[in-house]
Image 1: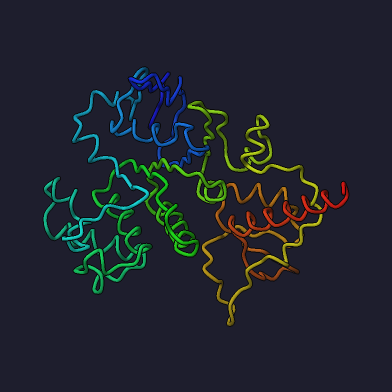
Image 2: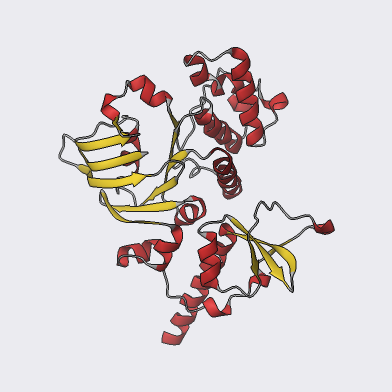
Length: 328
């Protein structure tokens, strides 16, 4: 779908932002690029839609060089979401979302239907929000509009440049959940840039870790957690040997079912026993956002990637404190 072949970016002042980048992103894949500041993440993203020109190498989309696409054709087929969403303040929410479909000369009825469909997808009632102005929305609501605006003309590819980093934790987690839900239903090829490893683990099919303009490691969240290629990745991911895997008690972290036996926000079909090891839970969560947990052949609740990341973070902190006491 998207292929980087010996791609480099050097600026006139001699700064090298990206060096000899080679990688492929598959159709429908949610591909997360992460790394410290100055690692080349955003430059890599912006080269895809030619916001930043390449210095060397080639980027292909569907086996065609991006330089061979008409610039408007290229960008109309790529949705783009920024860190601070730039909604037009004088336009209604409907008008903001409809910009690219109107440029592509969609019929008005088709545009209205698409706008309403997308608003509903992120929990914004069209009857309430269609005619509101951006200033009447919260930051999280504006960011939701920014995400669906990028999807409005049904692009093949979506680029997201740290889209949630300016939001409060609750809004950020809600939008992450929205993205997971949207991706399951529409399967867009997405490149998502972040500096937050927990966010990357939650969202990604595969993660690309960059440093100083170069790729250090590409793999699934599980592969990177279990097999970091070097000390930099270990430190960046927060990798620790699995010293507490045998003590995992799923029952203590499961989100229980609500009264009446109805699952709490569960879309999972994969069922695991409450005795499942940490290793096997993480392995399954690499392929499933949520898992249903069973005890004595009765389903008792669910777990998801976010819950397991929180569990790991807490135990790593406890483990570090305990080792500090022992050495003290």
